[in-house]
Length: 79
Image (cartoon, rainbow, N blue to C red; front, side, top):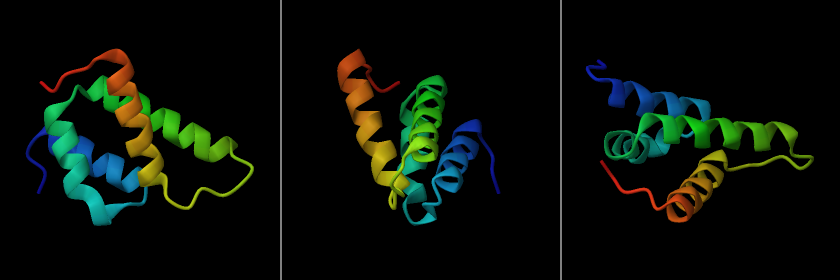
C-alpha cells in the first residue's frame, strides 16, 4: 500500500524507468529531495530516451547520472 506522496513518487519513477529492482533507491530520493526536482529529471531522462537514435538500455543509470549532475550544479541539499 502507498501511504505518502513520497512513496507514490518513488514508485512512479521506478515504474517509468522500468527499474523496479532499484525502487528502494527511488523511494529514498523521493523522501530526501523536492518532488519538482525529481520530476524534472524524470521528464528530462524520458525525453533523452525518446530522442536517442541508439536504444538506451539502462534508463535508471541515466536518471541517476542526470540527477547527481543536477544537484551538484544547482547546489541542492536534501530536505
